[in-house]
Image 1 (cartoon, rainbow, N blue to C red):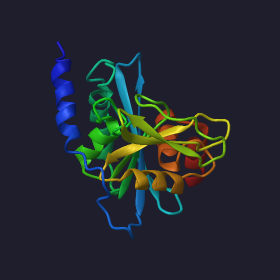
Image 2: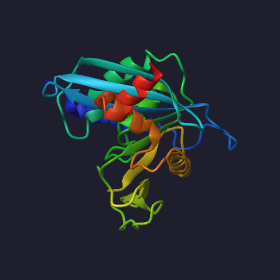
Image 3: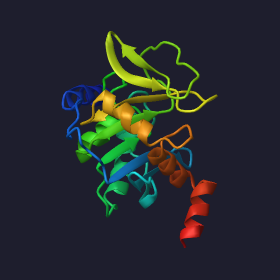
Length: 225
C-alpha cells in the first residue's frame, strides 16, 4: 500500500529546500535551454518522458532524449511528481549536453505543498528550473488581458506562487512558477524569451512534440537526416 501521508510530508520537507531566487548572475546568458514533458501510454502503465535541449538564442534543437519505463505509481492528485520523475531522470541521464536552464511542462511551487514536478525534478538535478503548466492546480488570479504578454499574479493564501501569462491570442493562459534556483521575475522573463508565436515556449513545445511524435518534429528530423 502506498503511504500517501509520508509522500506528502516528503513534499513539505523538500519544498523547504527549493531555492526561489536566481542562482545565476544578472548577466546570465544560457548556452542551452531544455524542455521536459511527461506522458503516459497503455492506459497509464508506461511512462514516457522527453527532454529537448535547444541552443540559445537561436532555439534550434541541439539534442533530444526519450525514455519509457513501467509506471511506478498510480495517479494520485497532488503527488504526480513521484509518478513522473523516474522517467524524466532516465531521459536526463542520457543527455550528452548539460542545459543551463530547464523548463518543465508542469507546476513548480504553484502546488498545494509548493512542490510540483518542476521543483521536484529541479531539486534532483540541481539546475535552474521553471514550471510551465497549461492549467491551474491551485491559487487564484484576476482575469488576464487578451493582449499577448498580459499577465497576472497567481496568489494562494496571500502568497504569490506564480504568474498567469497570455502567451497567444485566443488560447488559455500559461501558469508559470518557480521550479528551483530561479526567481519568479526571471521565470517570466525566460519564458517570454523563448516564445516564438505559439502557446508554449519553444523548449516545452519541442519536448511535447518529441514525446508525442508530432508532425513538425518528424518533418524536422527528415530534413536533418
